[in-house]
Length: 157
Image (cartoon, rainbow, N blue to C red; front, side, top):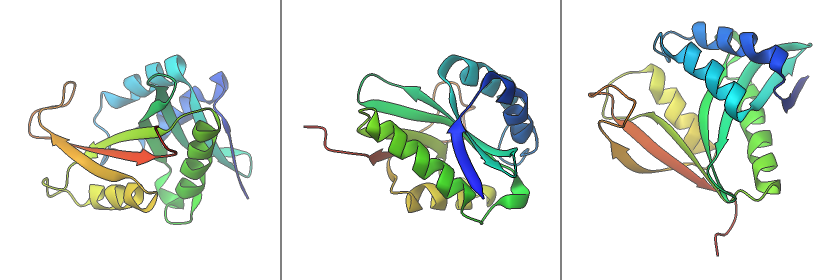
């Protein structure tokens, strides 16, 4: 059984370890960024049998907007609905707290890199829609265009 709960300070190193175990998705500088962002913004973790297997870090962008900064799931448990459960619970929590629009950035499809095909499909299954591509995105290396996705959690009027 999978449970989702807010991340606690004791979860930090486990979440960073998940990132370190995904070198095809994250560059070597990302674990330190995740560590800082999780401490600064907070997030949620997915647990199975008392063990953290996934996480999400979210930054609020005002009262009605948020951005998913980081999300990761242990590779061995992918395609079992755990990531969907984690993100669905997070989106419900954000909506309950007044968020109406959520953004996420990922590698654009114009880059032929198969590991991100599943990533983009995941966000799209959750209702996210690509609205832009930016290259270079500040903080990203040139030649790694960012696909900007948004999802509406409620009306904005």
